[in-house]
Length: 120
Image (cartoon, rainbow, N blue to C red; front, side, top):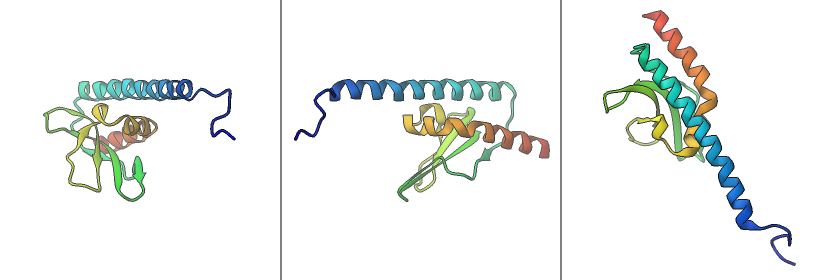
């Protein structure tokens, strides 16, 4: 008995799966860039972090989403690998799976930014 069904082409499946993931990543990146640009135009200037992690990798890595000033000097949507001493990184430059995981959290982050601004 063959491990692969006779009508299944693994290369075709890989290409289709990769195309779907790449589409998700491109859409997430476009949204991240759009939101970051709008927030920069508004001169928000407050740092906030969501408490809920984006990704938990079997206890090894935890990624959090925030809005902060990056070491490059610019403000933007950022991610931080909490379980290490890693610096924050611009979300649009984060690994594909982190960008995809972050997209659904952006509305909650925007709400948190709004709340923080109103406390100023």
